[in-house]
Image (cartoon, rainbow, N blue to C red; front, side, top):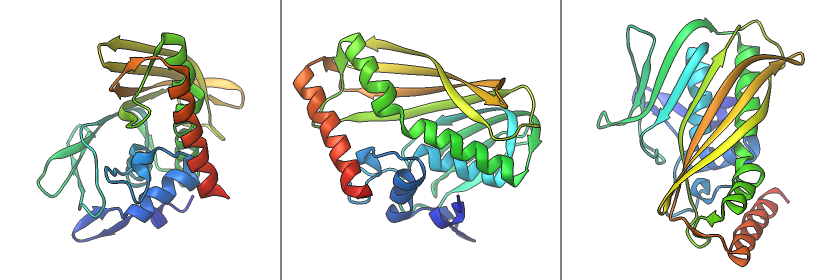
Length: 235
């Protein structure tokens, strides 16, 4: 993954074009969320791209928690604020925080490990819609609005027992959704493996908005639209 192809940086800060962010979502994360389409009216940079850039710049810590507090648009200059306790905050031109990163433990700046870990995580994360959210919504009897699907990345955390790992793999362990009216909060727990052994755990949280009772035809419409969009951009 040549990550520098997917962002720009100079004395003004770090920023993303719509094309860069959209191509990262499709080509690296295999993520076809319409929010990341370069022509989307409501466009945002993938949270997984912010995650990958952070790891490239600051390395992989044993314990990390990424909390997303705002959608990042294209062309906005961003920069990191570093705290004495290793924590980071990514802020925009108005110094408004859009991502907070808590870090603890040892840090690896091994480029191969950082590349492999980032790639494995964004691939895992990018497949969440069809493989995790769709069956979960059917099971719980709820669904997002098929005409305006709104799924937002809230946070991601990892806890690694050690950093001397090779060819890391992620495996989903447990999923849960808490529904309150039209809001749903999703939790996905996963483990991290190296050479077949568990070397850590992690959790991803997402927010679903505009929930309504599950309706098969509406869900099929949304799934078919997602698959059609993916097919059109991978043919």
